[in-house]
Amino acid sequence: VVDTSEPHVPVRGLIFDLDGVLTDTAELHYRAWKRLADAQGVAFDRSRNEALRGVSRAESLRRILDGIDVDDERFTAMLATKNADYVRSLDQLTPDDVLPGAREILAEARARGLRTAVGSSSRNAALVLERIGLLDALDAVVDGTADVPAKPAPDLFLLAAERIGLAADGCVVVEDATSGIDAAIAAGMRTVGIGPAERVGHADLVTTGLDTLELDAVLALPVRRR
Ligand code: B16
Ligand code: MG
Image (cartoon, rainbow, N blue to C red):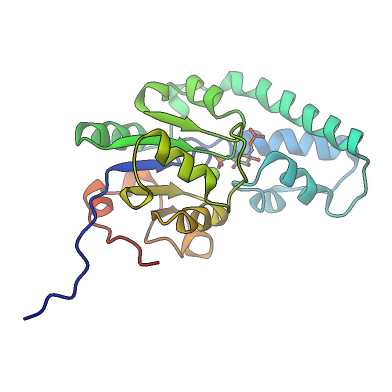
């Protein structure tokens, strides 16, 4: 009998998105954008906010303005206003804001010899991780301050893999955004999607949250064929 199955490439590291995976800063982003939009007289609500999941700050503002023409100076000022407001709101974050199962899976991954990293679009990721007390649970944090193209480009995740000393095919990315799963697939990584199939159904494994994710199931994922 000829065995045609691919040899299993071991999973050696987990790369987590931040907002929507380890904590829910989406609500704080929403409130800061909503205050800005109201002040500018631009229509914005929670359903429109859904389209900003995992999207960079500047691209988020472009989507909120939806074709409304503002000059560069005003655009930059709006970004600064929203971010100052958002950063102020991070004062409310505490370790209680870590999403269910996140602390546990990070600890279990470490205990089983896996490397752990964050790959987030946010330029405030280190601050958020410090507030929720997860910095020590991670071997590397790559965020929106890295000078690389944003998701869905693979660069952020490739950089995270490099920082934890792993090849792409040894990493699994855990993401809640469509563009994040796209980025991980483009990087040649295995993927876990957190959320509904409409959003992350193209991931190798889909679940509702880290509290329902079995590490053994993640370790058993076959490597993606390119
Ligand atoms: P900042 P993630 C993303 O985080 C958020 O989901 C998205 O709503 C936000 O606009 C983006 O970070 C940029 O955040 O304004 O703090 O740089 O999901 O990639 O961890
Ligand atoms: Mg996210």
